[in-house]
Structures are given as C-alpha cells and as structure tokens.
Image (cartoon, rainbow, N blue to C red):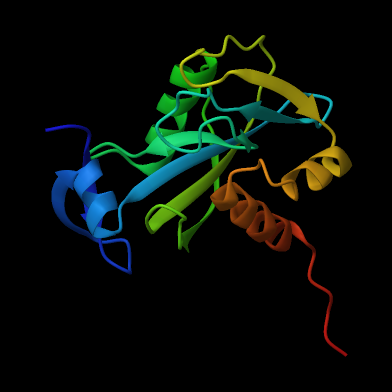
Length: 169
C-alpha cells in the first residue's frame, strides 16, 4: 500500500482510511494542505515542479504542499510539507479551505500562509526552480498555460477572499 490518506465526505468528515492512489482513481475526496510563502518584502515564492514529478511535471505553482497524512490537521500537514519541500520550519497560518474540483481528482484544499525569513533549501525532488515575485508579476504568471490549473483556481479564490468587502448602500 502507498501513501495513506483519510477519505472524507462533502463536509470534510472522515469516512475511512484509504490509499491516496485509490482515492484519486475513484475520485474520493481527501485532504490536501498548501502553503503560500512570502518573504519580508511581501513577495510570493513561485516554483517549478521537477520534470519527473508524478503530478503536474514541469508546471509552475505559487503554493507548496501535499496530502494530509492520517490523523494530521491541515496546519500540521502544511508545516510538514513546508519543512520537506523548502527546508523551512514555521507555523503556517490557516486562511481557508474549499472543495477543489481538481484536474486529476477532487479534494479539500486547505490554504495557509507563512512568512519565510530564513534562506530556503528546496528539495530538488519537489522544487526544480524557485523565485520570489511581487503580486503583479504573480498575477501575470498565474494566467500562463504552464501554471498548475488547481493552483490557478486557488489563486482566484484567495484573491476574492482577501478583497475587502464594500458596505451595501
């Protein structure tokens, strides 16, 4: 058996423990935790996935992350993924979650933020290239074809979530 995840329902309640590959094949909902990393200048980290990655090879992304392990909260999974992929120890702040249709399979996506002050040491098995972009540069990049489609959906939801609401009337 491969990577184990919690199969969840449309309310994000645990149903059973399953192999992640099975969850994807059967399009069962499971949990994915992501982190948006910013530096102290307010730039966002963007990275390109390795060409040999099993999912979205060579594509650009503005989030780091992966499946939450059995019994792991979104926040715990986000912190683990940040350490594994960037070599950074931090306590990512939960922003929101949403039911992502997903290009490969549907899942619950928990989005977090972290300010990264220390130098990053990306795992080459997870990050082939990285750079820091200002918001306008990121907005332009997200619309390019070589961007992970699910990350584009998360970006649009994040921007809508962060927009201040105007009073009615």
